[in-house]
Length: 227
Image 1 (cartoon, rainbow, N blue to C red):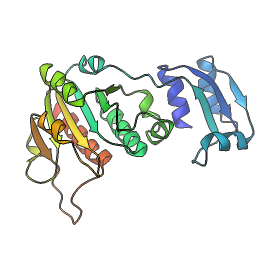
Image 2 (image 1 turned 120 degrees about the horizontal axis):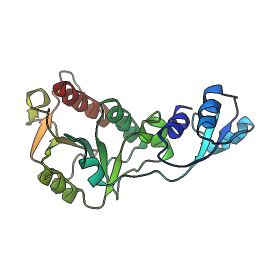
Image 3 (image 1 turned 90 degrees about the vertical axis):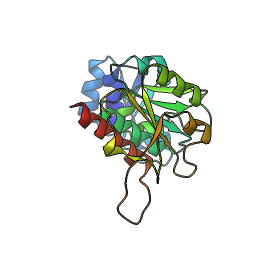
Image 4 (image 1 turned 30 degrees about the horizontal axis):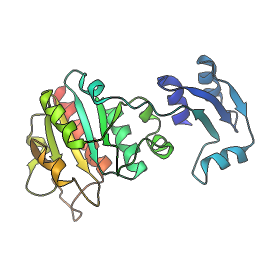
């Protein structure tokens, strides 16, 4: 339900119609405000569209996700950027987008190949935050990092082990954090394109955090330092 409401509120992509099996007043009100028709349908219609996934009885037919350009993301004042390398789980991407929206990040950068895009599952996992965060897809992630550095952004690879603890870094200026998938990590060429490495010290038996949790920790530390 929340992703449908946020798709309407953001007005970033076209919403053709809302399908409602539960008579949700908040959705109907939001749709009316944007002139989007609401079609009351049997719950089975929503079940079919969800393809076995969890839902709250509301769905929407929408246009393609409006990806941004890297240039648009870097145009922000003191950019705060998350770069995801080879993350393939839409739920992880959705959780990262939710954290990025909450921390006021300038955007999220993804590779076009061998990585998940902003799918319906990612949108749902983001609780609709995907509709408000700028997301760019780049063919060459290493070149994208070079463009960031040319724009005055410090780029840090998030790694385990011998790396500077995130609490010891000055993060009040333009900064980008590069995170890899939990299985493969950051690719070597991408890592070599970073200015340095940063770690999140772990005190327990597990050696690392989920990529979305790590992104949230780093984003909110940068936000805290910015005041």
